[in-house]
Length: 305
Image (tube, rainbow, N blue to C red; front, side, top):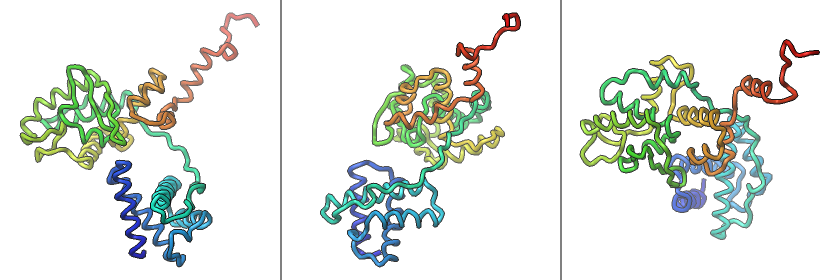
């Protein structure tokens, strides 16, 4: 990669962080994708971004696929390329955006896994040992009760909790703030943890959830703790923070069928993101159909033929 190409990518990523408030993880992925693009351009002998056209971008995507990248990763790579060239156009460096009409291969739609209600009850009612056990139970109860993302949970500070009102204020993607309800059992678990928290947390620490060192508990530590708890309970699927969010959304939709309401609670900008949770068991749907549809109702045994 030429020093000029490396500099333009660095400038773009810096500008992207200021404009769109992207997480460090997303910015890192974009940087990796654009460095892969620059390396591919070097192999083609390109010395200027303006040498790329749609055919070259399609070839780059095909090469990425042949190198083992899946459809979702290629979609992200093309998204990074399009955003980068929009930036170059604004800066007067590029004349066109060669990735504008290039699409990645469609990825198979994967339905999020969820624990059923019995598995969730088994998990949440397992014994809690000591202060950190109470903390872990409060984490699980809050994740399931309010459908929080892991990043939202990690960044949660004490002033964001209103246990009297049974609400929590969270800051989600794009730094958007929303207030979501907290269930009664989660409130009980949070009060039990907070009563123990003072003996663990540093005096100046505002984080709701802290580790042994008294400081904010990191995302990786939460992932590891939940995975161990899942193994201890013998759950069929690996326990991870997002599984609670999936279960929250699935169970709420199965009970209420209020897609818009669940969208608001999850903090989804687009309802199409929420629609992935509308999968219901086919046998359940078939039973509802048999009971409700006038052309599907079975005749009773004493009905006349």
